Image (tube, rainbow, N blue to C red):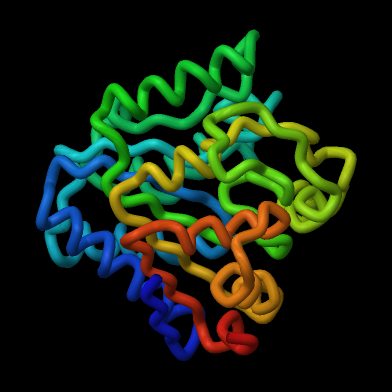
Length: 242
């Protein structure tokens, strides 16, 4: 695991965008694993800037997002499909048909998890998986207790995760979905390269446990210690306990 600490959140996001851009330029047909969340908004903005100002092309790549809320239609203001379209996909030259987000409205969510997993495998696997970090150590929506060999599936969100996401739902906890579809930890670890970005003091304890603690299913991100090619980019606040 390679850790590069940057001064602040803006520098961390830009460094992450530059790393993703370098991998895309080296392999224009790269299969990208993408994430959402407040940390990722700045990373996506960096990628849009590199597309606009430096000619970074997404025309040949494909993407798979980590997760989606169950029960939210894709045009809901808080659906990750809508977020990805507005923050990244609609602003670069990727074909929308080459972007994949789990279907939170699928009539059979278990079958949707299996279908999504099979689609990743059929693509040849993810070349670079981008991750954020939850305050409880989750990656994707793999909550504490998730098996390190887990695959794409339906999960029940913890109260900690729902509370963390409450501001996005007008501060109303009852509006935050209770379930989601997420790539499993085993799915994430199957990527050939992983990039984790963590910013802010609220992530410091989780990041320290993920990097310096033992591999523990109660800290899902600690599974990344098993990966042979994992880069971690925290800002100084997130790295304060390392």
